[in-house]
Length: 353
Image 1: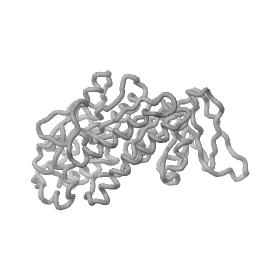
Image 2: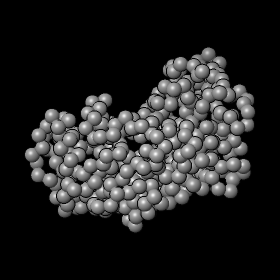
Image 3: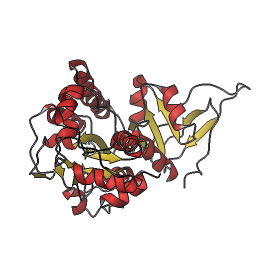
Image 4: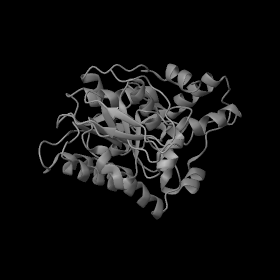
């Protein structure tokens, strides 16, 4: 049983004890020493689960880290900014921080690598921004796959982010994990993103990990994503649907998405793509009406027409003007239980907590 969660002083160093080859868990690292000059050593026990996580400071990553350490697991935070990650996540005995040159050490011997890295896409897509969207997802995932293949003690599973943008957009189609890839920019990014993840199980030394690609929909939390932008508008009585209002919004509560990530690690029957969406997607008009009711605000503003959004966001307007109806067939098939299956309760919780 792992020790209770506790805050650590800055300057904690971690040293592991030897464990069996397959269950070896990588050490927690942090630079510095106590004022007395004596290093503090925390032993990582062989039975502890250690997870390596990229994107740990993001909307989903923060909640995932919180969930894991509350269970007594250990988390190796793979980051480009150690100081920023420590500031965001706190100094806990169950957290270790690894800059990009140290990611190999952070991956070695872990139970799972969970890849949530990716630059935000809700902005105007210049050619430079599109390159950042691609690089932060595809190239980062390729790098992780290379490290996993080269690891002496490989993780058991690699859960890598993807998105429902894989399917392209449609007003009439319903997409499952078996649906084909779309043809727009985001679909192409997702296709390459998933291919990069699957490379982790190919032609390395020894047995490769099980690979899961989590095709995530609109994540509901007031701390970020679509609600962070929409809530202030509705609170000021100026919220309204965008575009025609008949575009699909395939959503998922952040808590359910975190639970699905954990399930993807623990359930060996899950591999390949899995849709990270709730069972009951809605159209934009229905979403906005439910949000207004949840916030106790009337919705009397006219819908925002397509043209201003296209001028403002350029090609990125596809995110709000077009959508896709995605259902989580694989999650249901493996018996995953959603806490928030319908939009009303999900919005009620997400706007308050």
